[in-house]
Image 1: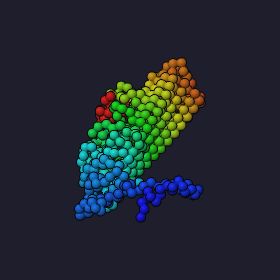
Image 2 (image 1 turned 90 degrees about the vertical axis):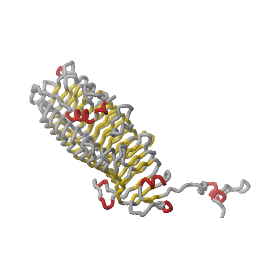
Image 3 (image 1 turned 180 degrees about the horizontal axis):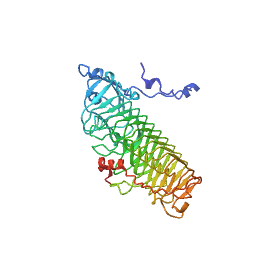
Image 4 (image 1 turned 60 degrees about the vertical axis):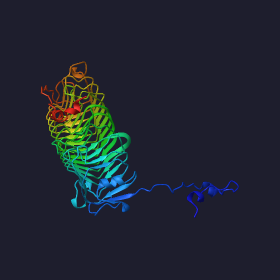
Length: 460
């Protein structure tokens, strides 16, 4: 029988090809092309059977596989540390992370104690899907090396580890973490769902999408992006659900998109851009009933190891309700925008500007705050506060600064509507002019927790 190459060789020049022949695509030689293999892992197998690509441990299958192969893991509990240094697809039997829990009778469970991670991904474009990774008292459930990228981590459950995932990526290919569940990763007291700052060392993080995950009962943060040297960039955190969890903490980062997330009953500040953050968007999130503040952008430089100011941040179209401390804080930030947010029933000020310069606060609705609706402190200058609707706050508008701006402040107030103000002229429609001398030291209780828990985070 003729070979593929002979069958589809061009016709001799002496023979005129028909139009159909001229349009026929050439087929390359296929004899030497490797076909990806599928390996099966089951802890009920009697022994490894390389001829049938059947193995009793995941690591044995990884060792036998080649780039591009797939490893399917049947239900069972695999007591091993797995290191993947090839471009492989690993598919487990469950759990259904959408259901936020697992079913032990049909789960592929991996558990061990290892400071680096139960599962360690150390090659480009590895797929890790459908596993329960649990019980690591020494480190994270999953570790992804920042020497590589393009990881795809989906439909997994991470529980009872020090952290769920220690996430690194060099950004060459996009890394995706999607539809996973993170539950009670606190085996060393204060754990995180996803962290770029595990106990074993800091990781760079770039070109990453974290979306549609569920987080609960982590005692530190749902997601923490942090590196004391270098820069994290192009990070999207979208449409995640966080219930009774720590929140989102970001610093040393560029090009950040935090959107569409729902944070309920946070044990810390809901969304916190701690410092050295530029070009970030915090939009369409719901942050409600947290123990501390809803959204905080920036921190006072007096904090030990503060990474630096924030700039060019947009906080818009968020719902920030019922948090124990402040609704939204803009601290030591410049060139940023707070707009179209609905802020209600927070324990202290609805929106508080602390030593914040040249920012825009526009078209927000702030009501029923325990403190002022919008409060600008004495050190904040050059801000524009425009077209906000304020009601039921104490007072609705408050500005402690002094200068040549509106009503003798250092800022411009225009077209704001409310009932009460700390000095006449801040509001266009005010039925009462009150001088409220509140003490507004916001304490940063949660920030102090971060100093205690993450001293190394703040060493520049």
